[in-house]
Image (cartoon, rainbow, N blue to C red):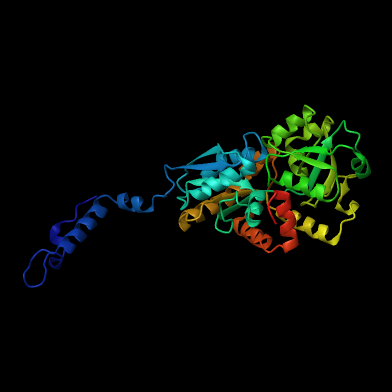
Length: 367
């Protein structure tokens, strides 16, 4: 590369009007030209270097290690770097508490977001917010949604211990003691389903305090619990051996999922002779269960960073390598975009007053 001689630079560059005084702007311009010419790419690279280069992004999971939320987040964290310009490092941190409410509240409080923290929590927490639960300290309409990566939690299934002499709805209704089903906390979908079953006249008692699905299954093995409410796909994919060895069996299925009708011989809502109001409540719950593992960033996250994360999120979920690894782990992928999540949450905000009152009762809130 040769040098550009000053004699080739027009005289006007150095002169300011009649006085011939050097012009600062002209000199700075010349310096910039020389710098770019002598070191091409240095300034250009600085201008276009991705924000996320060299950064670390945290995924905060609102539930305990070892469960479905945690497993999915860790799988996602391994693949996301390839789909974010700059290939940042991703780490997963668990922040369990109140069915993921602790994490949702904490991350929302960190606004404005800087694009370096993603939170993953359950849909039930959003419903608590919509119902005016004072424990909820965030506005779901202000969270910036990346999407939901997994199949809807449908059908929801009441699983009972295999050794229980409960085969039909009539058997259940004859019990002198209510069936003890496990849940992590108030507002979590398993707890809501238990309360819904109770509202239909079924003898159900929800027992709180378990650390995710793993803790609930362990309690079932110890015969500390008698049942649980979890989606058909999730149990088949992660805990299929408990079905095969007879530890648990499906008893009641609520809602139809994609390519997942209720198992043969299992009771459904059609067998319960619901009233009009009960049917409307069931439809509302089924709608809420159509989104499951919500991923979001706090309000105030710069739009350009949010767009990068949202696009990378969906691209990672659609990648053949991610889908292949998910399949090996027994995880089914059916992504919903952030726009879809926002739309569904918007629909739930328009629930009739009777349904809102009943749902508040499930949450233990004043109507």
